[in-house]
Length: 196
Image 1 (cartoon, rainbow, N blue to C red):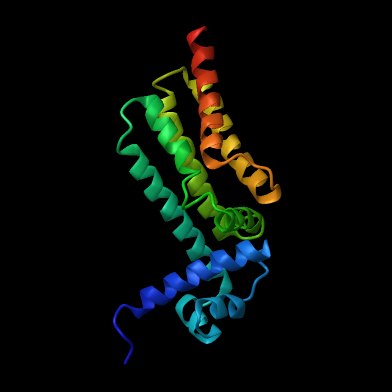
Image 2 (cartoon, rainbow, N blue to C red):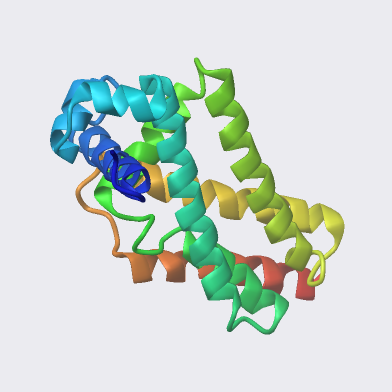
């Protein structure tokens, strides 16, 4: 008889093993067997819990997105002004749960996977729309709608850009410096609209 709660524990172990394997390999071309071995279980058990490698990848991405959502909610708790709320959202992309080498590798590989997988593409589109919507909610309080759209696109592009740089280059600013640079971009827009 299986122990109560073991399924959740094992699924969580497999998700973390998936992130680690993808991060180490730098590709989604890892096997269920490699992932299961890292998690300390058989590939049969991994298939039992997820059904396929594709479903394991999708559940791993959902986990990463949930972690991102938790970081956003946590950072928003102390944000009072629209500018603080925008910074809380952008800073969350560089939270320790997101901006570590293995998770960055997972993010980039899932972006590539979205080119071939409708389900992955839908999941990433949900994330992108939510980020855009969250940024626009407060940007529109600070500037006209067209400027807010452009500023939101720029902020999202900076986030994506720093992820690409972190994945492909060794000499990348630390998280706090990146947050500051993204904040400088927001300040640029705020100054631009205030001077009309």
